[in-house]
Image 1 (cartoon, one colour):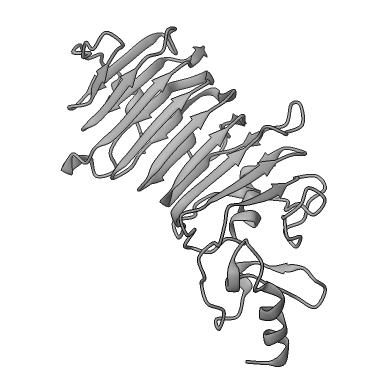
Image 2 (cartoon, rainbow, N blue to C red; image 1 turned 30 degrees about the vertical axis):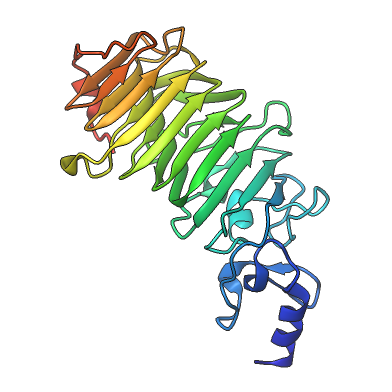
Length: 289
């Protein structure tokens, strides 16, 4: 190992973000994991950590560890984390500016064994995440107090697409805008996942919440609980398909069609009654995935 690499490891050893996976260059900037020398070990996260994002003032060359040294993109923050989260939680706090799909595509299938929380509590008034937020991997994902708007001109058909083998929770005060009836507000498309969605306002979605097992031919289960959500200008509120079980405790409709099941999906309401009727929504399923 070169002297410079040894120096970088020595400087990074106490870094709570990524252990030996992260290193500092000669200017004191954090080297993203994708750029680290192969000799660095993929050490698990050592403790809970918070990373800061500012789309206006930030830079992915910053360490992201303080509000004064924020990353610019979500991807930039995720790239500083090791694959093994060590059972801890990494909180990504969003602050200034609007994040666009071409700067933050979140497809972190390498992440496992922990929780990633994307927190928009401090976002500028009117700031958004614009595009499709795709959450993958073997970790748990949390979204809180975020405002998201689908990219109608993009290839993705969901504002939030969940593909994790783990858990998904959305809580707080959130807004999902499907932007002229995008296919799904939230699509939970997983081989084995549980989800809890509450405190969300859905608007302009063909389907507000959709649950479909990724390998639906094998009937792998998705369990989803929904509550305290509201919606306007959506076609269908809740859709459950192929071994999806949804517990719906919303008190208001999320769409013109309140909820529907097909191909073995089940929805149960507050009274414990399973929804048995099926509504034809075939036109909505065109290019579903």
